[in-house]
Length: 215
Image (cartoon, rainbow, N blue to C red):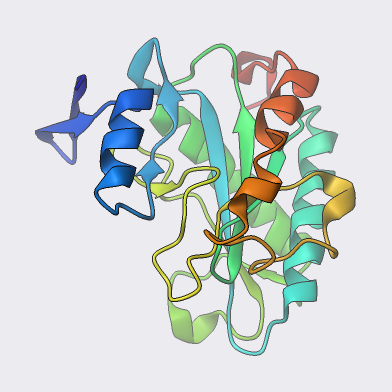
């Protein structure tokens, strides 16, 4: 199997490359929760998809997760960006923001931090970027710390490592509120996989460039 060598946290690491035979090899051995830092195939130290991770805290409800995704979509669109929402198979979600010009992770992460800070200031009762659990209250936490070489989050269509085996499910924006975490699991995943929603939405978004943003 192909491997990828990168520098992460000041040390050299070797990871399995995301190829079809690697995924099948892992899946046949019972692997779940397949993750990546979603780099460019051209350069594993540059971004292909930026990711914003959403997680419910306290008494925040699944409806709050929908509102949080929509609020962040509005802010992204103000920057002329589109994203692909994905339910993570647990109690959270992610937005995948494609970029064609393979920006570096440090610059991307700094911009994402600024974006999430603005979102939390705009919706203080819904969103938080607080560093500590105790300060997050009954809100949806936004995180971009995984936008780094070696910083993992769930890949689309992978199965979560929980008793329900929930599938990380990309959804169209008009499906939010109808499709939720737990709707698709390992047991009925074939039904969802009749269409590749992630690929369709990525193709519809087309070319987005980090260099065109004000940073």
